[in-house]
Image (cartoon, rainbow, N blue to C red; front, top):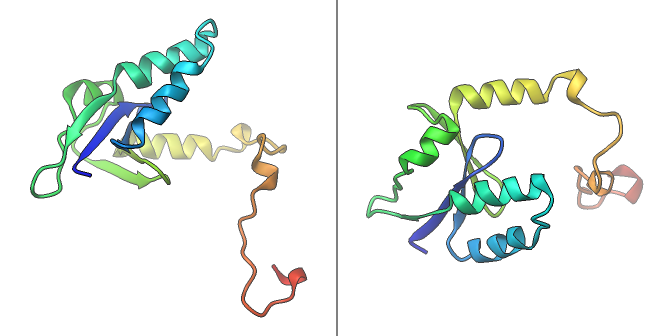
Length: 132
């Protein structure tokens, strides 16, 4: 695909999706209960700021001014692959957010819903099951 969709996140980064993946996410966002203020705010942000992007002949995209302004995106940026999308952060904002997220006071001793099932290690070929 030569087109993408960019939008903003409540954590003040730009989210970039392949054009083909965006309609499913947009449909899911719009099924959230709009009487819930948090869901309504998420709909306003993500659907309201959604912008189609063209990839130029050199593989570049131009992030619209509205998205750069909302996210504080300046000259230096950090780009992270997140499975089906990319996150584009202002470098200073990324450093501040990542340091804050690692602060002991913000970490919970109990895993978030679903995280207790995540396995971060893989079994090595030929290893017995107890040596995962």
